[in-house]
Image (cartoon, rainbow, N blue to C red; front, side, top):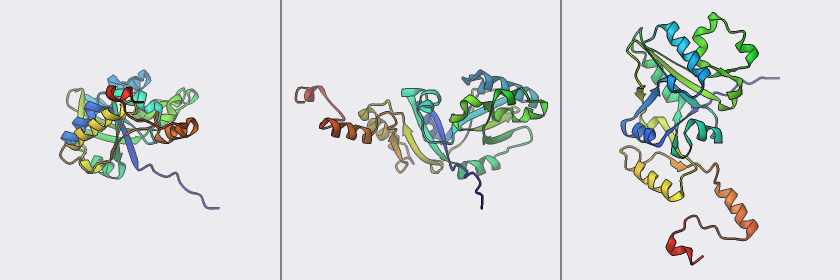
Length: 236
């Protein structure tokens, strides 16, 4: 019986704040931040050990997801109601990273994260030190994480920026906590950025699904009203 290999995910979801998303679209540059600001202290520790081992003056890491949207990604990765998601085309991003190795003292790496159970963590040895940026505790496995790691011989900065042309972006999603009118206004603002007229932009419906609402309306035999103003309130 023939066997099939695991299919490589072709899209990378980078969850960021709305201001960071607008900056990325305007400048076509994507921030790779300082991992010292990461929430997971285990991650911070492993990245610090790797930086010391490599004798790098600067170390930067970007966390992204290879799976579809989840509540966890929006709340933790994107920061809830202030967040957005850039869906990047992996087939265009990775060749750029391969071409952008500027010199022997600057190194760019990217890989899917491996998730370890505590029994496996206890068996880690100095031989695995180069793998540290791509190891994470098993409890985070559902994040399905992908990382870009950059080390430099220049002093540490809050972030380092890589190219991110508009044609690398498959879609932009706005967080599901925005009101419908807020999302529409933000989409109109993004459309005014040069080069963004044809990018797919929409609000996530993860927690406010149209299909879900329509089902509820059918059950209750009601008509759904997506927006409401004070002038309309007494007419309902």
